[in-house]
Amino acid sequence: MSLRIHDTREKRKLALEPLQPGKIGIYTCGVTVYDLCHVGHARKEVAFDVIVRHLRASGFDVRYVRNITDVDDKIIRRGQAEGRPALDVAREFEAAMAADMGALGVLPPDAEPRATENIAEVIDVIRRLEARGLAYAADGDVYYSVAGFPSYGSLSGQSPEDLKAGARVEIGESKRNPLDFALWKGAKPGEPAWESPWGPGRPGWHIECSAMAYRFLGEVFDLHGGGTDLIFPHHENEIAQSEGAFGVGTFARRWLHNGMVNFGGEKMSKSLGNIVTIRRVAETHDLEALRLLLIAVHYRSPVSFEIARDEQGRQQYPDLDEAEGRLEYFYRTLERIDQAGIPAGEADAGPVVAPADRTRVAFQEAMDDDFNTAAALGHLYESFVLANKLLDDPKAAAKDVRRRTLARLRADLLACGATLGIFQRLPSEFLLARRARLCVRRGIDPRAVEARIAERAAARAAKDFARADEIRHALRAESIELMDSATGTSWRVA
Figure 1 (cartoon, rainbow, N blue to C red):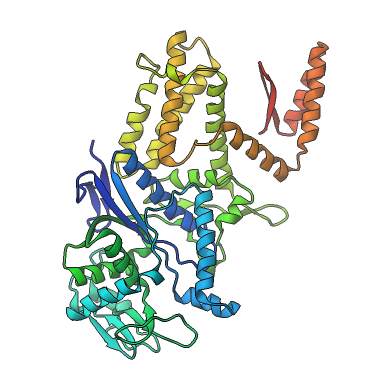
Figure 2: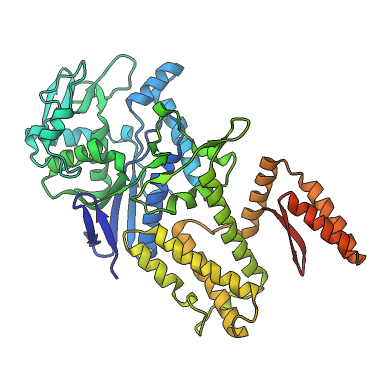
């Protein structure tokens, strides 16, 4: 089956047909760097990280461009409030963003242009719009004339008349039409400014993306993405700018939009007081669990992120707890396969227990269906269940078939996990870190547990099995599960 994607503009699934065979150009709107990144940012970045990974795993030569908005009203206001230049604010939070995305396993884009380093390109696009009668200067600002672009509203499925009914002109604006939007903002005291044909000023928010997409991907490219909250007005305005400057049919050929993160049906926002930063999550959970939570639903669907409170009023994240529990199951299974001592070379051609023969095929089919990570994870889960069945029952299949199946499962699960950005660490690294976090959260002393395990081992050596069982049962009552093997006893927090 060919790779199919859901195009927001067409509102249906279409076969992905690259502009140049074998090559994909993709642009997504990056972060406005005025504060720490939150779970909503993680949603978008993980979604498109997986999309890019799958395109590359499918053999495409991908050029991924993600901009940085480093001049904006919010950045300026924070700089003024803190008594420092706006660009200092932008650089601080740009570095924080890079660190947070790296911790989430988000691969860096091929190009990450800053708005402030593409002023010449912004001016060029505005001049083109002026020449076509689609831009006008007013009191030091420059506005886009929406009335001159008849297809405005095609992405969001709204007519200009309907949009105009809900629009308004803010105080201090000199628009001709309530739908018109700023391309260039005249300089104000204490704000960053650059010289332009209309006087000193700075870019409007929407124009930077048209300018940087043109510079780094050309007049026409394959895919443009972002969150559903950007469909209108941001992406609608980008289309108007780019097609207005370069002609109808230019700019992005297809549009992809990820769903939002919801808290009890609410969108995350500062006004609602439900912002959870990536760093706040990392204080209590493995960020790979956040990644798993975000890809456990289709990228176009909303993600549930419940916030609860414990007896002391501290925030708890039940959905993340569940995701980290699933991740523990996955890593523990991979550790068990490793401990079985089966060389990777045994994953050769030959009969295997079903559905191990279809792990990669089923995964590819799900991902080729509009990057359906939810379905893809479902297929991987079936493979993990099969692996545990074979590990629990050595007689579940002929010896050579069993060993070959386990070797094949390990290789395929790791390969599929690479596309999703999960399962890529040593199992012990994840499992020990999770155990340590749970001990802190539940007030468990690891040294005391190890001492009890040593006491139990001594009892077993003395053939005092009643005492050994007593210790096991006592630890189980404290949510400590013991796991005996040929190499000794390990433990986990249940």
